[in-house]
Structure formats: C-alpha cells, structure tokens
Image 1 (tube, one colour):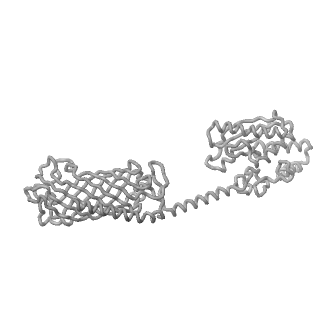
Image 2: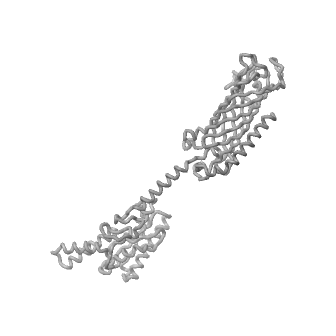
Image 3: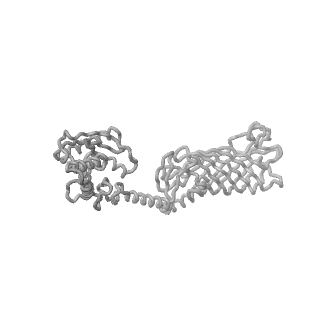
Length: 456
C-alpha cells in the first residue's frame, strides 16, 4: 500500500508545481468569470480549478470467480449492498470543459453477509489517472442545470490484488499481484454550498492483466488476464481557490463576447443621446430646452429664438400676427381676444412648462423663458389668474414625491409673485407622481419633472 501512496503524493506534488508555474500565465487568460452564486451573479477574474474528492460506497467484482464463490446475492434487490469502498482524489480543470484527475481507493472484496457464497476476502488497492469532461459545459446547458452537474471520466488504472485468507479453492493468502487496465465512469453532482458539492460516481474497471479470481484463487486459463469491477460511491467535492464558487458551476464568458456587448451598449447610448424628444432638430444631449414648441425655430442649443426678449418665441409671435392680419374683418378688441385665446390654449395644453433636475425643487435655467412667458401673459391680462401644478417622476417614495411636486409649484409661484404678480392670482396644486413615461428612461423622466400652467 505504501508504493501507491508514494506514487499519488508524487503526482500531486508535481501537479501543484506545474500549477504554480502557470499561475502568472492564467492571469492573462482570455476568459472571465461570472459566478452563478445561488440565484445571483458575482463577477470574478477566474474560476477555481482545483478540487478534492472523498467518496465511499460499494465495489463488486464482476468476474471471474471460482465455482461456489460470488459477491452478489440473487435473493436481494440489486444483489445486496455492503460498504467496502473508500477513496479520495484530486482534480484539476485545464479549461472550463476539460480536466485531469487522479484517484486512490481501497476495496475490501469479500462475501456479502447472509449470502450462500463460500467465504473469501481480497484486498484491492487502486490508483487512476484520468481525463475529465464537464458535460454541462460541453453541451452549454449551465442555465438549465442550475445547481446540478455532470462529469464523465475515462483513463487508465493500476491496482494491486492481495488475498487476505486461504480458501478451499486456493492457498494464496499474502500473495500480491499488480494489475492494470482502463476505467470509465459518470459523476452526477449537486452543489450544496458555494465550494462544496455532493456526488454519486458510477465506474467500471476492466483489467487486462488479472490472474486472480475475485475470491483470491487463480483464474482458469479461459478467464485469465481479464477481470471487471463495478463501483458505486457517494462523496463530497470541495473546490479551493480565490473565487467564491466551485469551478464546476462558474459560468464562463469569453472576453470577446463581453467586448461586443460593451460595443452594442455604447451604440445604444449614442442612439439614446441622438433622441430628439421635442422634435426641434437638436439632439437631447445638446438640447438645453427640450420642451420647445413644435415648428418654432430654435438655436444650436435647442432654445426657442426670441430676439426681442419679450418671453414669446419669434415664430409664435409671427403666427399670432399672421392669424390676426388674415382676419381683417374683426375689430381691435376681437384681434386681442383671438391672440389671447390662442396663447391661453398653448398654455393650457402644456406647451409652456417649467422643468426640474432630479429631486430639485427649483426650476432649471432653461425654464426661465417659459416662466417669463407666463409672467408676460399675466401682466398683459390682469383679469386672468393661473393654476400652477407640480409633478415628480417615479423615482423615490410617494410621500417624498407628493411633497416635492408641491414645493416645485410653490417655488414657481414665488418667482412670479416676486416678479410683480399678485399672489392671489396664483394657486398651486401638488399632483405628485406622473407615471405616464417609462421610469427606466432617464430622458423620459426629464419630461415629467415639471410644473404646468392652466389659465383661469
């Protein structure tokens, strides 16, 4: 038993040395980890490549046996069960899909208690060197598998068989035989903690150099040099490394895919910046007054042109003047009424509004022209009053937004009253949240952080 143990220790030492040499190279690997932590994702730099595995279960010699010897009891379900297999191993994943492993096991092959077989007892020591395939990654079904995993392993094995008692078939106690062959198996697993999983391993050994029967006697020439062993075990797998999750469940994405996604996001941001909310021909990211009236000329910053500085856009004045001049059958009083009615409709329909930055109660600088528009209207129409209604976007709780909408209306009222309008002509309404736009759109939310006016 000492020789296999020394061989396993030598293998693990060599693998650790290789891993240390490759550590710096792995830092520049073209992979990045997004660890699927329960139902949450955690970003990391790599994945845990090393894992230790401990298992125990049952090993049954399939063939050959001498007459009167057998391990399975035909009268029991699945031939009966006895705990006679103990093993431990180490695994290293070369990539997210493929890895290598070594496993050492001890099997106590003996008569199943209660069976009608003759007594026998044989010690079986084995060490394996195998390749590993992570089937979940290979078939790209990580999202569907969630906490479940599935590994396949295949490789070579070396073993030592040693009868522990003399039998009626042979006096072979204490003799030893070295064997070799192949091993193949499947390992379903389930992650119970970030770096700890439970698994079941089902493996088949095929020896191509086996002179012993599993009962310890020498095999007949017809069965010589062949033998099979079936092992079913349950165990724990612990992954260690710098990451927060077992490497078998780390979801790996190629950095090139990430770069493409980032590029798509940038293109999306540019498209968003090029949006023109008020359709004045100036993109929103350059528009300091993104609530201009449709069809009214604006400057390069999206501000409605007002050369005479009277608070009324020049194109709107021209439109009103043209409407009045075309109606040459009305009196001067009627002309004033037409102009006043058109302006009142523009105001009441929300074309004139004051806007606010997030969580602010003072209007933006760009809103000064629109508040000036209301001021001029009220000065030229002393018999009119105005209702000032404040709104907030959907961010924040309802109580906060109700107060914020009222503060916005109150501050606009204060501006107008300090500009010479009698406060009795000004009433305020706090309308709270305006949920008419997509709350996830920053540009859409700008349009509902506002104060609108209604002429009374």
